[in-house]
Amino acid sequence: MLALQGLVLGIVAMLVGFETHRSWGQLRPRLASIDPLAVTLAAAALTAYYLLFVVGWILILRAFRLRLSYAEAVGAEMVSMLAKYVPGGVWTPMARVVACRRRGLAPGPVLASIGYEAGLSAIAGVVVFALALPFAPHVSLPVPFWALAGFAGLLVVLLHPSIYGRVADRAFGRFQDEPIPRLPLRAAAPVLGYYCLTWIVGGVALLEMVRAVGHAPLAAVPYLGGASAVGAIVAVLVVVAPSGIGVREGAMYALLLAYTDTTSALVVVALNRLLITAVEAGLLGAVVLARHWRGRAPGGERPRRVVEDDAGAGLPVEVVARRRAVEVAEADRQA
Image (cartoon, rainbow, N blue to C red; front, top):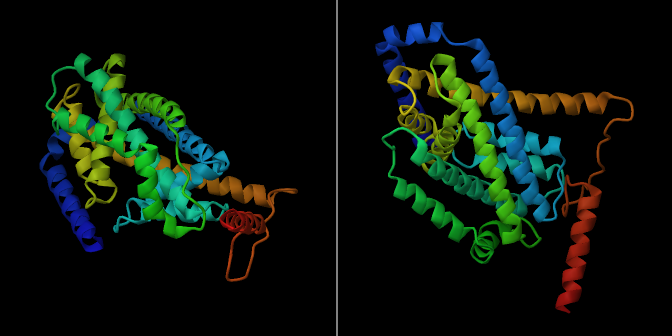
């Protein structure tokens, strides 16, 4: 997988360079006329999207009875987002597991929460796109809509607690000594609705990117939010492309043609990738700086005591104590 993703990165870079060189005569006037204010508004909306998106993951963790501060959740989320660019395919979940382990969260529940987050967000994106599609101009979909609808329906079935719980127990149970939590339907439904709203915010960001090089009505926001969701879904499914480079842009390019021309669509998808990466890195940097200054301030956050024996090396004392209490309670129950 590492070699294959490295090869795909090389091919995408070569094709992008070739297409940019071939179309430079058309691209140059568009790049020279980009509206800085629209780009700034797009970056602000994209930042708001990420900050809101993290809340959905926090809600899932709280349904698991796990606690993580907002700043810690933002840092863990952005680390995993940036890890998608590293070829290999495993660094995205592992980066979040490592970030959460430092805060005392076991790997198993964290991995299970990532699955719920990805699945519910994808379903919400398809819902938004389906509701907006009848009101959008005619567009040639990169994949048949029935395939998207079937994919969302499959996720609904797979995320049912009785199914996903068993899969999570087998897949993630080996990483820790506590049972994998379940996300009840009464908790999943509000999170699903919340993710629908976050895709609308994502649509505002994409609208401002389109307006940076052209024109699009405000009514296009739901459609553009759904287009962003489709691009993200395609990026996840095509595992051979790190962070979906190339395939995400291709899907969004085809959908953007409903509101813009080919040259503008090419500029927008490139701008979208640049802003996504910049916002993710900026948010992670802000969290790191805030933690650094909080640690240096008088009365700031003090390092947690950690256990140094083999049973709980590197974990906070309170975390190890809680786990050992769970072990004792489980032994008493079995007895």
